[in-house]
Image (cartoon, rainbow, N blue to C red):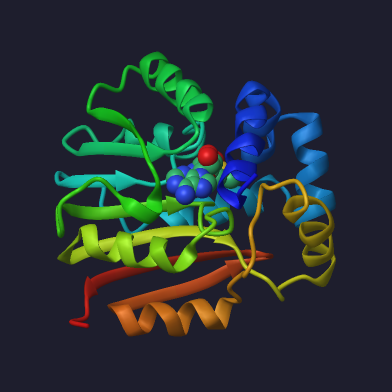
Length: 230
Ligand SMILES: C[S@@+](CC[C@H](N)C(=O)[O-])C[C@H]1O[C@@H](n2cnc3c(N)ncnc32)[C@H](O)[C@@H]1O
């Protein structure tokens, strides 16, 4: 199996157990809270804090085209997208199983300005500079080809666009790092190499004009505005 196939398989299985996954991502179930504490050293407030930082760059009256990659089950993004009534939103993931849950959630929330596309972040099926915002929540630690993912998210973003999101960063908490290596990498959920908070900042500063980077425990949150000419 290639690394891509391993990742696809890992998230296919997770797609079936999205109750557990969603509980962990939101800190709202007993099992989810246990994992959040044991692996991430986070409580519910920490989780809400990193999610708010990851999304705060998108203005409340955002009315442009927004790409989310990867959407997963949409547990974090869709409740937020529900507030962006005037946006034209495209959600992409390569796990059909995860997106099935996302589609169901969008229907339940009555969101009708979102469409779903199965695809690979390393080869996005969109024109250059076609989105006003690209949102990426908890994706870069999972993507098998991170360089391609940075190139593609940059390529599809408009010159004055917003690139914002969050993901796991190494070296913020050694205990988390050990669990990520021994469990998450081995099972295909996460794929190295991983950024640190500082390496991400310097990478993004080469690509974007205004860059904010901060972390909550081992989750690094970033927001960028305006592309630099490369
Ligand atoms: C940890 S989940 C995050 C999902 C969601 N954004 C969240 O925060 O709950 C990672 C997602 O990345 C997707 N993924 C991994 N590699 C991908 C790729 N190359 N292209 C698109 N999606 C990918 C997986 O299918 C999975 O749904």
